[in-house]
Length: 276
Image (cartoon, rainbow, N blue to C red; front, side, top):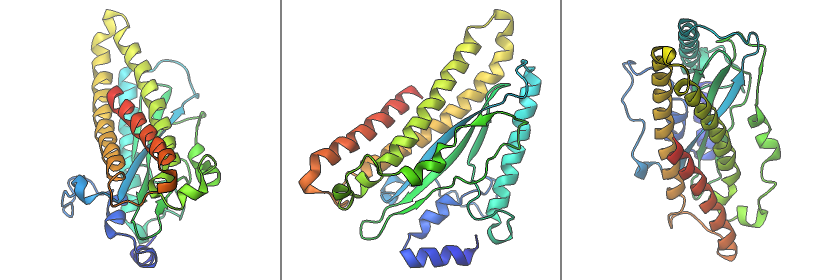
């Protein structure tokens, strides 16, 4: 993946350069080149959509409970591995990554068994041009923890099964209706993640009093994680509202069905926001 490759793809499909700028924003906060332009104002993002996809993994190498300091050590190792992964991506042409390799946004270790991998589906929907969808579902990212378990990577099946529940006649005229299954997929992954977080919170708040101090570190970790999730969900809701503006084409002959689909998507993400 080189700068020339990005330039050629952008020119061929007339993709807004801001799409690539946001999708490849892997530089650290203390990078001298960081101009702090992301996240941007909603008014400048009406055609750009970013959907977090969270995959839950399970570590089965050992079911013995780990000490809090051991979990902290695993989290530190995971953060270092993630930083190295982002550095590789940011190098573009000099990176050792291959076309189709996974691009991981975030990595969380929740306890001695469960961890979560966050990726992103980035979409550029320009009213007069074809949609540009980017699916990153390549190799797994499990080297940060020793794991003989597994993770649900149904994201890799999304391009193959996509559109089975949609009407082609409406898809041809309504861009947002065309991508509702992607929103549904993202919402399902996030609800699964929140269900796991609920179980984690129950475990840390219903344990014996003697473990309250030990739980404080885990609760702070979860709080920071949920704050980031909250901000991303707000941006998804802004994208849904932007797609309902008059500037987006609509299928007048099947407007009710498309409107119901859009309302369902908005309702699901509002539910996710309320739970976060």
